[in-house]
Amino acid sequence: MASSPGEIRLAVTDHDTLVDFALWRPGAPDRVGDVYCARITALLPAMGGAFVDLGNDPGLESGGFLPVSKDTPPLTEGQSVTVRITRAAQGGKGVRVSLTAPDAGTGTGTGTGTGTSAHDGATDGNLPHTGPGLRRCGPTPLERLAARWPTARIVADSPAASARIPVHLRDRRVQGLAGLPEDIEAECTALEDAEVALPGGMRATITPTPALIAIDMDAPPARGAQAKQTAQFAANRDALPTLMRQIRLRNLSGAILIDPAGLATRKRQALLEPVAACLATDPLRPRCLGVTALGLIEIVRARIHPSLPELLGSAHGHALRALRQIVTHDPTATILRAGSRLIRALEQDPLAMADCAHALGHPLALRLDPSLPDLHWSADRS
Image 1 (spheres, helix red, strand yellow):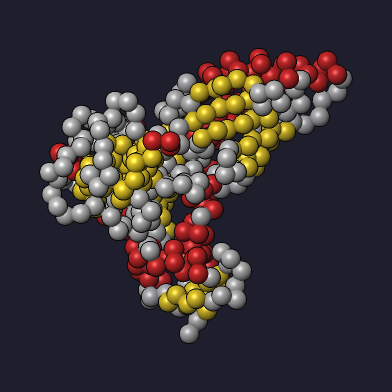
Image 2 (cartoon, one colour):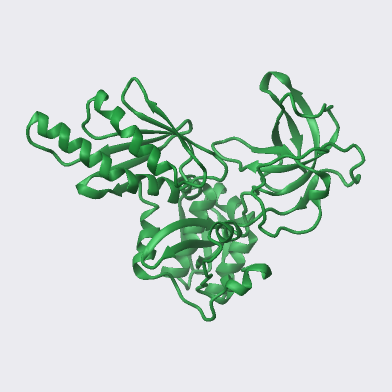
């Protein structure tokens, strides 16, 4: 666990190898697995679902979308239901929910389950008349990783990070404090880069778009036409395990299109088998759909939690980066000036501001400065 204001980087390691990664933002959870008492606000047969009101929690004012199938019990507008969030808000779209049993709405989160299954008896017109709102928190990123890696020990780098380890995981906590090993920390930082170094001198450039993730592979030049095709195929094949690992570590999701380096379209078909073999170890069980007419390898990976590029590129991600830089490089600063998006993101994450004040030894005041470009900021001293 490597902590900074409002954010903890969770790295699962096997000796000197990074095998899993997640960002934990305690003050701004993605809400996947949370159980809510909700109210049906609009039935939309043409869209195959319904909109539900989840209450007044920040970030959920627009409600959620409930897919409806032929097996879904009859629903009516205004009806109270119990739902579980199954997909975080991402890509400009709100959360997706599924029906769940009313008795799942009591107690506190323990990190069990993924929140992706629905149960019978999910609709209940006799739910307590407290209005829409949270009934139970889902697992945190730490709890999800702990469930995925049940023998892993938990090492924290600060008392504050250690205190955030849930009670039911504290028997796995290592005594004492320690930061990430230098090589692991460097690899975690490299996950923020759009370019990825691959074996054999190859490189990949990852470009997220609203519709899909585009990955362009490049290889060093080879001599001779026949030799080039043979060498390029081998280079692409040997680079795939590293590339698929990067997809998992960055949680790239949805439609993913990969453009192999320097191969004729007919040769690209032979890459499908090694791609499928690499995907078989991914816990989200992504599918390789084949090669498009343009020669792009098409993969679909379940979109549940926001991808790392989306988390880092959001206004909240930029705001937390500003706090981290102030704590690290300008600890005497007392004022953070920024545009409205960054200020709003920090106002909605009081835990991050408290972490920052604790690290600095004094509060950091927020000042709106419309003259600054979007997502830019400056630090001042009073």
